[in-house]
Length: 207
Ligand SMILES: CC(C)(COP(=O)(O)OP(=O)(O)OC[C@H]1O[C@@H](n2cnc3c(N)ncnc32)[C@H](O)[C@@H]1OP(=O)(O)O)[C@@H](O)C(=O)NCCC(=O)NCCS
Image 1 (tube, helix red, strand yellow):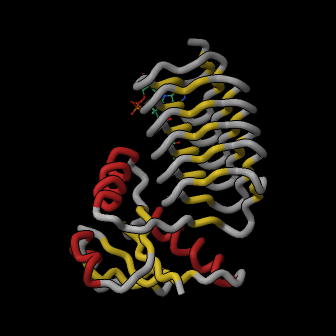
Image 2: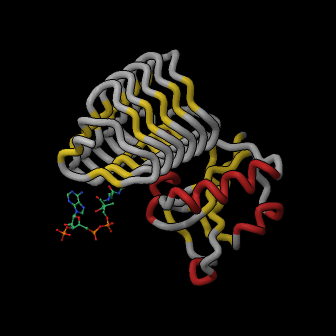
């Protein structure tokens, strides 16, 4: 049995718990056993039948086979993931059973794939990535580590998304565009030109 500890206990973490339960319902050997969160006010509470048992540094006290970092903020998610990875922690992939993913797609450890996501052939998804609800990632995309493709965003073919980049809710990225590391695409934007690393693109982004 693969017992999974969820790092974080907020709304995003609860979506991950739900995905893990849906995976279990689908017959996969996955069991969400606990949340760990540094907010002591949450300790002793439970969400979706999963208890918040303590702070992140108490991971060693919870029996588990795998961990998933469930924090929306990219910088914090990266920091926690890399810290745990350096300790030799094994990471789960949370993949909702309704996601449609081509068989050759590569998915890195710790990545979360929500309901109704579509990922087409040749795509490479990095580690600790969020593919949020109903986004689509078309053929031969390359999604960098710690990136977040928000709900309903659509990426055309051959798009490259840099490390830590956020593609906001409902955004559209035309084929073959490059989004630099830690860039941000605003909700509803249409990306027509490449986005420079560390910058924010909104509305009709023409570079
Ligand atoms: C683009 C974004 C990053 C800007 O955030 P911000 O730096 O805090 O900027 P502000 O909210 O102060 O807005 C600055 C200006 O940009 C405008 N703006 C903000 N977001 C915009 C968007 N998505 N499209 C168009 N204009 C936008 C604001 O109206 C404001 O305009 P003004 O100066 O004329 O008043 C943010 O609004 C956004 O879209 N984030 C994506 C969130 C998301 O999808 N998260 C994932 C959820 S699961």
